[in-house]
Image 1 (cartoon, rainbow, N blue to C red):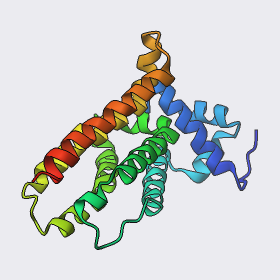
Image 2: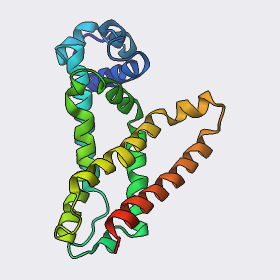
Image 3: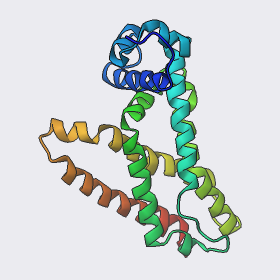
Length: 213
């Protein structure tokens, strides 16, 4: 085992910890097991991280940072766009697709965060911080474009989190497990869910709430 700090050692430790946290839960995974999975000396883990909690915190901070960078790469809409342009079919489909792919890329860490968020400290609010990041830009643009015409912003924000974003995260985290449990082809389940999600998003958030006459 490697007992000296190396250029990639920190990332190797984080990847090993992420796998174990997803398999056994944060409380069930031990530092000894992380060291064994990462093929490093346990002392090296403490060289980089003071505790198992610090490893989890670093993983969560990394995901939040990636989410911020991901948002900067999303489709840019001109400042003078109206709601119909802002929520046009092409942009809506691309937005939903890209968010699905981003969270699928981080499925293991997402499962950990969602499990930890049920505990008393709520994983220091990382899940809610992610949800806020995902929705805040859209809310700001809606306010800007309507000049306050959509009165219940708090209600709209709550609906976006609990009827759009959380269902998306739940499917990404548990959809494959559910399909396997029921003996279903996950690719077909995923395609079906994606179609349903887009319809619900369009019917409620676009037609009913935002673009109603």
